[in-house]
Image 1: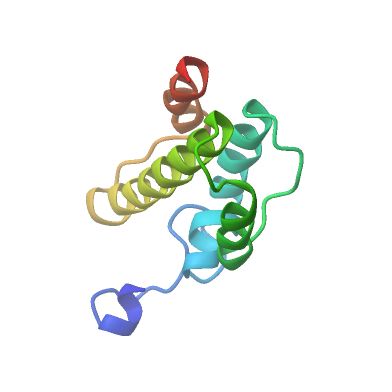
Image 2 (image 1 turned 90 degrees about the vertical axis):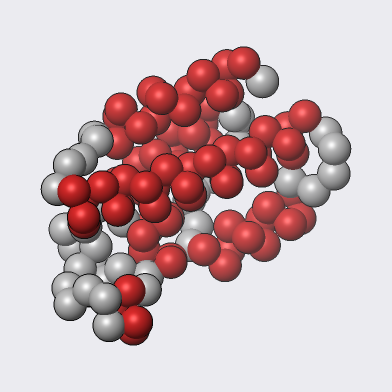
Length: 115
């Protein structure tokens, strides 16, 4: 993302130290993000594998539309997890600080439990 803008020189994913950083990899395919998503999907009872960016948007459009509580929870979690993965990426890139995926997962579990 920032590579094309000329802001960063390293195209490697800062979360998994492997793979090229793009939307698909950063938010869903890198080991860090995929671990978070597997656990979150399990908690909300969604029995499927984590897909890529486009596939997740298509799935959300088809299965998480409407006002049902499960749809609202999924959309809220999608937004929350993407935001916090981006935040974690920025902490690692610019501040040289990091949070393990387990810590991120536990910090979001309260959203699922309270819903």
